[in-house]
Length: 358
Image 1: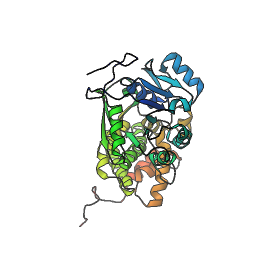
Image 2: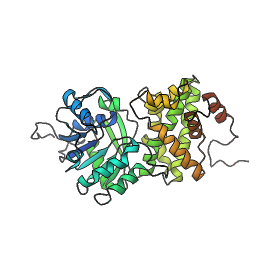
Image 3: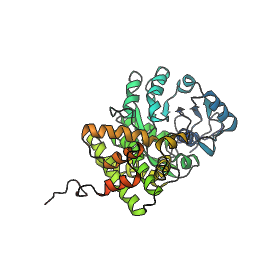
Image 4: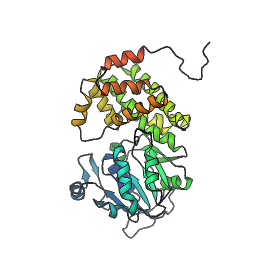
């Protein structure tokens, strides 16, 4: 089943068959980038982890631990760490973007000249690109148009802290190019990291972005102690909003009831690992959005996404009351109690939107 590589490590795919050696470039050394790099390193010998800052790359090389974003997780010694983007990307068969959503466009643009022809590009970031509503994969596809059309989105209930430690998890790889998603499934799949395929790249991507807004709302309700019933209601109705938005832009409704929708929603709305839930918790306890952002070195994607989605929803006439109230909270227009009252006293309606009123 196994063979020894020149480095003396075992090279297999998930089924135990000999796999094809690939060079992988992990672009982004935050918590999620470090966790994925560590997971991939268990199966692949040729992996480069790119850090934007030279001093951060130097520290990771020396300590083999990302103390700032993922303490306690050891980066395998054979993982190469660099702040040279050209060195990381050149010759890579698979490049994985794991930067904050606002940095995806500029990073992809900088990578494009060094990309290998027909390389597989994986977007592991979660969020939207801009107020026009572009998805991150659309921006990546545009920047890499002269190089490759193998664009894949990876999304699911995957906390970096747990994936980095090798705890069992599952995720979804989605693409409009069947061959590309199959390659990603083989590259990422491990006995502790199960990868499912999807051709609904819109649904998978919207699920990963919009669940962060609901996580903020659930954090707020936990912060003011509203209980399990309220959290369950927020999560359920939040999922409806997510699906409503996604379907409006061509996603399939059923995708939102899978790992990248409901699965990610459960993990993000209930876990102490979730930075969006923690931000909502502080918001519920009276902190302002500015104070929360200044008090953490990590990006709270849900804040940026909430404003982008709310603007798009208004423009497209998509009913998203939870998102709207989250934005009012973030802007200081409403208190948590006022937001709750607005949501609870809305006009009566059916739960299922296809229900025919008498």
